[in-house]
Amino acid sequence: MRLIKRMLEEIMRVEILIGAFLIITMVVIMVLEVVMRYVFNNSIIWVQEFVILVFIWITMLGGSAASMTKTHVTITTFSQFISGKWKIGLQILVSLVILGVLVYLAMNLPASIAIQNKTRTSSMPINIAKGHYYSSPLLFAVVLMLITEVYYIYYEVRSLLGKAIPDDYVLELRGFLRKSTDGKGGAV
View 1 (cartoon, helix red, strand yellow):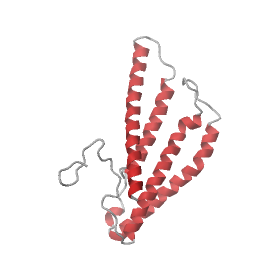
View 2 (view 1 turned 180 degrees about the horizontal axis):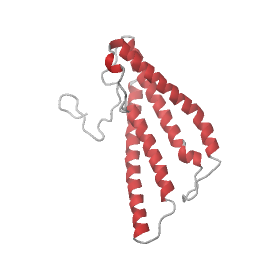
View 3 (view 1 turned 180 degrees about the vertical axis):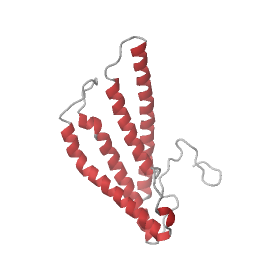
View 4 (view 1 turned 30 degrees about the horizontal axis):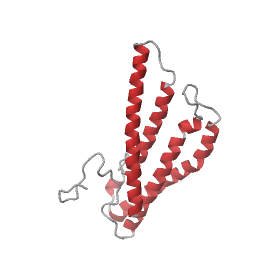
């Protein structure tokens, strides 16, 4: 599982890097569009479709990274009143529901992409099939979230069974945007 953890953390690093690059790209393109429209009175026709595509990718990459770091919004209405094995059992149930939704999406998205691919973008410099435009980023994120959810369910089940789990099993973005320490003052 250490290998899978390192792989998922590396994928998360790449996701964050791509997401940051896409945010910068989106802002630059939108500023360029504002300047072109209001200063030169000549707007760029493909900016809206391009920004939508970039925003979809940013959202899907961010959702996957949030899944990996367990930072999605959680509702603790019931879990705050239970503890021990019941709390772990509830977490496993929630994880299995999430896994079920992800499996459903992964099974049905290819058909949806095929239907959407019957139309294409209208103003982009590169004519992209709309299934790839709208749904391929979602399929990419779903596959990564599936792998992540299976990784976490493995440790949740081990915990429920009373087996030892490492303290550092939660995926982290170490050594990338912030300095992590090893507890002795040394950087990791």
